[in-house]
Image 1 (tube, one colour):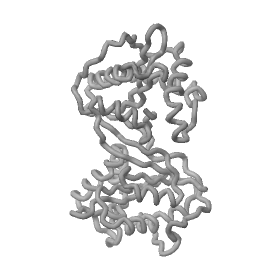
Image 2: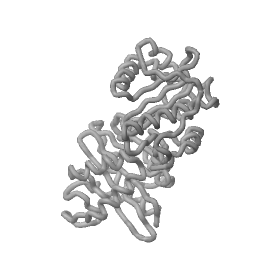
Image 3: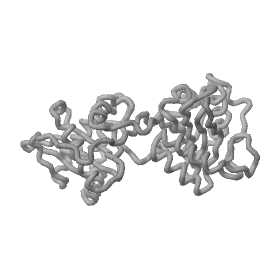
Image 4: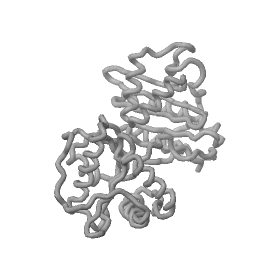
Length: 330
């Protein structure tokens, strides 16, 4: 499973440069971004008009299809009068939203349509809305575009505009028994002390190596940043959010919790397919349930289908599907 990060804004922004936009002539017929005036102003509405509370809830619900964190961020933008609704429709034939949340550090566009009526019109709207942002990029704000993972045509188009993929994947939630049974694998459960640092860094790097290579992500980050990893583990131990699993003196696996999320579950590559992953996952679920966490989540990369099958066998269901992007000059 790819490490979960509470970062959902994207990577550090870079100033814009020239890029090829041959798919559509987005530099013509452009219109300014809808960011001034009253909040919840839909594209084409008069200044000062407000979206009704029912529409607000629907908009937030649509954004939740991207991720729970996206919904939370948009809800904070609502409270701070920082959410501009470019387009929102809820009808028999079309249901979705395109909106922009902005603060001093970041501009995030959200696009989530669970039913599309005319995708070409929506792509034109994306182009016309985002072009001024791309032209005005100075590096002071990072520019992100996060989409519902099923909106494949829009995802492809956003990449043509020059947005680079951060991650595609899913948020899953646990929908099983409160205290699932743990199989007897003879594992010894421990937490962390400094003597475990090197084997744990090696475990995490080996466990994620294939997935990182497949997605073009950096390798060996736990060993490279071993002091930060040590500090992170110490913090997790203080919060009772870490366990390591051993057998015959060998490190088999580990998990890390972050709030309501299972952040990491790792099993040594040479110890897989022996039931250890199921045991470690089940122990993690029981630990989180004992802390009265109302809903347990995890996040996985789209390419990690093996992990998804494991989680689904253990009563996890899809909560959201996402494609996260950040603008980077080409």
